[in-house]
Length: 339
Image (cartoon, rainbow, N blue to C red):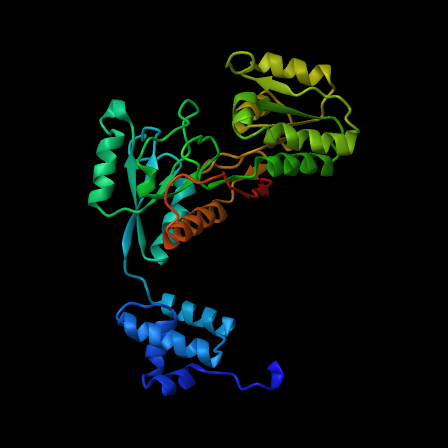
């Protein structure tokens, strides 16, 4: 008989064959708590012998129904950050709060912990606290540039990191897509008629994010201007320092620029000096600051969702410790023009 003509085996058929309820069969097949090992083994063996094939759409529906009412907090996870807090302001909390909200919906409470040996919180002390509170999952905040390693017993924890500065442990990383943000800025300036577009780049930061800023700009300038050779104005090379307004204006004049891509702080110097605010575009508009110039803002909800989903997946699958290779999730920014 063909597969299409064969009778589909249901959970009730298995229940009748085993002499148990349909609910017992359902729980045994998904390995739920509260059943003896012998019952689970017998039900699964019967299902296999009868040729039972689960309906994937029904399984997804039942999972959603079971999760829908699970609003109670089942476990605590940790937000571990290394930048000192500024009063009551937690570093990068605007990025992390959407993750905390989604984790709460799934039954996890996200609790902040500050890790800084000179301020009294050593890795050993923090580890003791996390163990005592039964914490399994850690969301690592964005690192300070000079700190690339977090020395915790990672074999005890599942982790995911915000940003991509971290060198150890090797964890899944989630970050805003700076490459795409630069391309969004370039395409905006081109759309309003700019034909000589330049970029000011914080080179030290660009190195940390694997030259995403430079790559995005060179991609667009090559496509539009045929690699026309407008030099990028680098910051902090060879030593860190901010470019002065006079240096920026001289660079614009030398290359006859009618549009500039950069970061908010440097661009506002130009705007305050009289440059048309429509002719600049900020790669990452600061979160929580009223928008004064066009620019790409990080999509906080999407970033938080990616962080929470990856952490939940790691905990549900027991993916503790440092991984074999980095995985990077990039979230496209939202480009906005002030009215």
